[in-house]
Image (tube, rainbow, N blue to C red; front, side, top):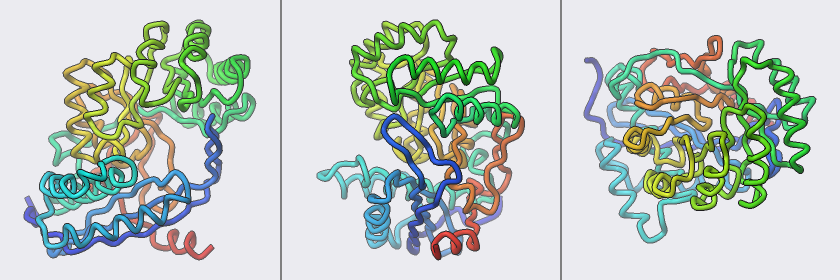
Length: 363
């Protein structure tokens, strides 16, 4: 095995960019026309650089998250580039403030970059370092548009590109609007393509129960986040009323929140977001929870890291393909006939396209 397995943290380089989206993402909570991204380069004394990125969701959070990460440098500079050791140190530092929100995201970004650096130092793809092998991971296309005509057209594009599963966001209007969008997408893709829907937490529990009972007749693969993400009891009531699988998890801040949700029987499947679940380290713990609970685990965005992690998740299910960082990467993750190809390059495969970044920051 080549490289420097014993790495020491030299510093962190952090940049924030607000990337304009070619096609805005429409949700029941509003429209995202840009992707605020925080790019992280974790420098080591051995010359290995680990990379990761975070999503700020709103430009308002972009610079605060950048500054928080910059502030972390003095806390971990000179430490061993050990994901678990750094996690313990940062958890102690943030215990009184709490490891959620921006602090949780910043800690996860550092964790992801540490794992990337370790894999690069060993000359291995991240999936291989974690005990798996590069392979194809089933992916579904997460649509960006909500209107029935636009969503149907986008779904047709996705199927033409080889996807066999589609997710459409609903909940921006009444039940009739939900059904119109679902049926338009189904009509565009045919009976053999799996169709999921995502409410993005937009419904009250009673309304959600009424709607899922109607949606049960639409042949959907799952119904995602029908009510507030942290209302586990409410989701459990919805799941009990529905015949269609309920999906939940992208907003869990760490495996402990996942454990509470599982205990409440809040969902039939789980969805892990590498930024919110605690980075690679948190994902591995969450993966074990999913396995012991016999719950299929899918990913939420971050396809570059998620592909590697699903490759070692015993109950790995679907990778969500909703590209945000692709335009500023030298080699975006490759989708082959509806499957994400885990790259065989060392690390996660993240390498910045500096020319593209300069074009974005100069606008």
